[in-house]
Amino acid sequence: MAENAEKEMTFWDHLEALRFLLFRTLGVWLVLSMVFFCFKDFLFGQVILAPTKSDFFVYQWLGLNVNLELINTDVTAQFMTHIKISFIAAIIVAVPYLIFEIWMFIKPALYQNERVAIRGAFLFASFLFYIGMAVGYVMVLPLMVNFFASYQVSSEVTNMFNLSSYISLFSTMVLLFGLVFEFPSVVAVLSRIGLLNRQQMISAWRYAVAGIIILAAMITPTGDPFSLAVVSLPLFILYGFSILICKSRKTEIEE
Image 1: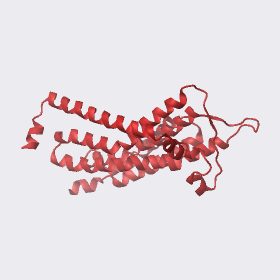
Image 2: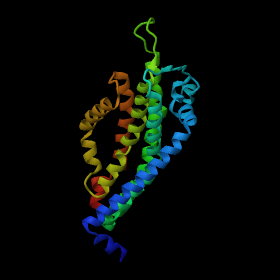
Image 3: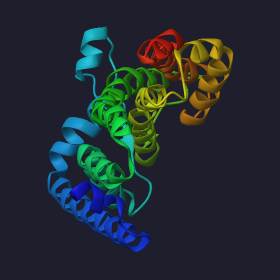
Image 4: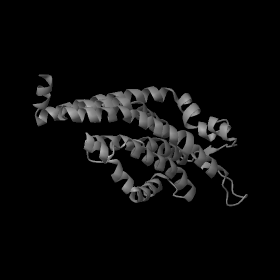
């Protein structure tokens, strides 16, 4: 009965449900933002600015000596950066809740077989998002910081980096990698409902290579060859993983 009632919802009922979803999500986001705003020392000292210090655990593992000096040239930049990072941190923490809300909203419109196929992908989506963020934070960002901090066109030119520039690099590498790592979830859904198979992905590898290079160029703020290579490598691995989880044409025929 409940399922039939959900299917009989009118357009305005769906619009009302969407409105409440947005209000709930916005409320959770604002509450989490205020919480993170109150933990400025931990958020910046232990997380955001950690890759700028030589005692960062990744540099310790690799035997690198990195000490990035940040400066601020804008009167309001530090305060606005505090607010911006609090909002971003709230979004990151709220991802599982946001995915749950989206799933509950679209669930009534799906057939039973579609629910089974998509539910697993939605559960997997949060895990992939945090894996992507970890790759951006632990692998990509430290290598880029180390490269740019040590690179000089002349010994007479001292590297001093602006706070806003570093925050932009940090946000791009960490947050966007989390979003890009959702690709296998999309592939899993398309594969389960029969719109994509493993053979199609393998045959499209040339287009995938071109697309990954273009995407890496868009993600990297500088577009230099080193950043392009560092960003592209995890994306190539991600595409290979997506091929593995995609169902083959033979499997589909057997089913």
